[in-house]
Image (cartoon, rainbow, N blue to C red; front, side, top):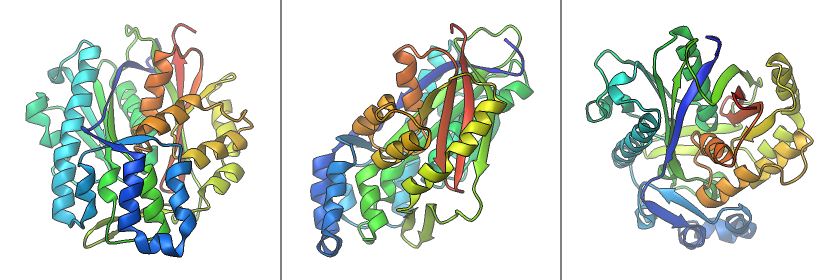
Length: 351
């Protein structure tokens, strides 16, 4: 294997303990967002049309019936994210035949809470990381974070061949559920988002053997698109920014950067693994890239069973694709705040 490529030694995922059935979330939303539903009756249809049957949450459903301030949300974030970090990271390291003490670099991707010290430091002693392990926390990449983390981890692995790089992507999107707000974006986000984590173990070096390698990576940010996706912040917590123009934007603007990356990475007829942002987003991606409707089966299945977990979702999809025998060149893609699309080229050693 070329030192220009990083090997993916292992991938693992984890979800929190509370299962949220979409029907139960819809019932709660009707109570919490009663005024919004009176004003916009069609909003209730989002829970049916989202293509989601269940999601997972770090807190039980009744926790969301009352407002929570920053300290309460932060406590829930650190507790829940730390538990998911440990579960996903330990599983990935075990699958790679490694221990936490073998890790040279820890990359943590998370945008749904604030922890200082950052999560990898919070769990460092419990995990057993070495005191000299390099810590690289990354905030603010939103739904693109899974591809960002894999790409950054691969670059760090290639920079120091032989080093073990652990990338942990963890998001608790449900903690942004706001009983005190009732915008359309809040209602839509309550129908879409769930919690989860994923971890990957990477290493580069001439002697490294692996089924999957990460080659070229890139991202493209469209100018003047800061209002499409992100957070606002107020005394109670994050407030979701989610433009209704997103699907149309994807239909019109996604194809060009995809074509440029595929050409630059010399990918021949690559399979696509992408972040399942929502049913309409997946429809828009298929339209933009002239794919047959329904092509993104793994993405839709993950959306149905887990909702949109933001950054880790694309790695959940990759895990599913690998389990069903993913072969050949693959384009990994996710979009997030900026507004930005991120890419990574994957190659399977067995064709």
